[in-house]
Image (cartoon, rainbow, N blue to C red; front, side):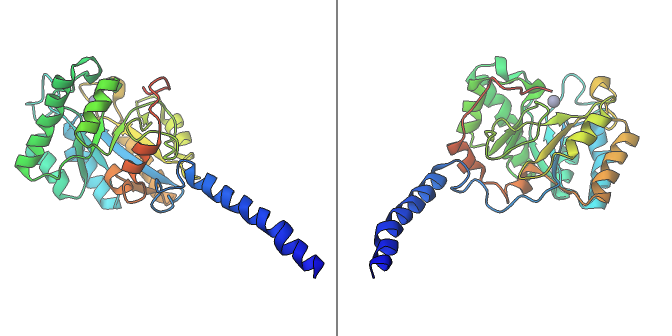
Length: 276
Ligand SMILES: [Zn+2]
């Protein structure tokens, strides 16, 4: 009996207290509340396409659709040649992307260097795209990408005012939803010379980390330094298909991550690498 007492009164209660303390500690750590809604499978990749380049509609969308891949298209009216339909998509084509089930997201009206603008100017740049989407029956944008990775605290505040769920930056590293603030989601950008770097990056999509690719035109005739040659893009798609990657848009990723909870819990660090 004495032994019984010693186990269940003397030892068990402190032990129970320790467990309770551990549990409370775990619950108070970022991520244990609700950032992760359901486990993120290994090999989860986000494809994001910037600048509303004509090839997004003519080349990319059909290829993605054939493979059942989701993607986010960050659109803008890229100056000065937006009206040239050989270079950029028109709004009907952007509307078609939305109809096809892709995510149409906000890259500002004029591809503005938002980091240098006042809050009023930033809000105008953001609202223009929202109004266009609204008038064409495109779903209200929930994702934003910083043009030229231009950012500031004012931009982040404007995004928060506008209720954006997330914003994509650069930085060449995998996205860890338990560490990276959702307004500073890192990505790799593809260019004509970094195929091996991108292939290596894709291997990092595991253990809760997500790989986000920033892709411009395929091809990108106006901006050759961010061009992705179509043959190279096909090699990426083949790799993703053959290795059973789960390829999706940011909007689809919101099924796994509670971005609002992440925004409440995680700190903003503008000092880290955020450009490509
Ligand atoms: Zn851009």
